[in-house]
Length: 193
Picture (spheres, rainbow, N blue to C red):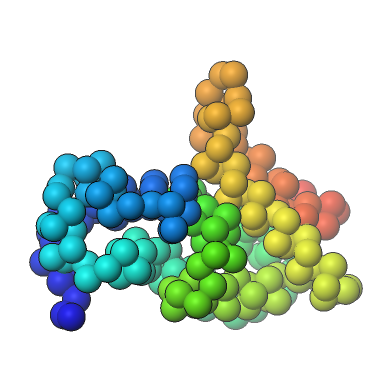
């Protein structure tokens, strides 16, 4: 079937609804009917533009994966801790911009293995972890990176549920930069120079 996502014009609300559903209940738990209703559309309208729930998943995640590819490409050489920390700041901004897509990829990724867009994201994340790792054990670096990234993805979606008072995004952002820096770069390199 021809890709008609561009014909949808106002597809942003539909893709946002899809991301909300996929992040909340996973791909298998999400229904096209609920996604369509949340976006103010009929299920048949969604299926006119997206041949399947898999096609909708791909369209919803694609911008986050493409932006991640750009970020990874920009990491040609992170020679020192200052450049690595500056990259982490840009990376946290990326996580904020794509928080629902990141939650889908990291919190539901195991169940989505085999979907091309998720497999592409997984390869990019492995590449990113390789480029960020400090000297030392590769296995330990991957573990620290995985814990930090999945925790950040989870907190970006769940922070308001756990807090009695709304924590301003800028405060959460600053903490995520510090925590990711400590986990990925180590305690001494995580602090700004």
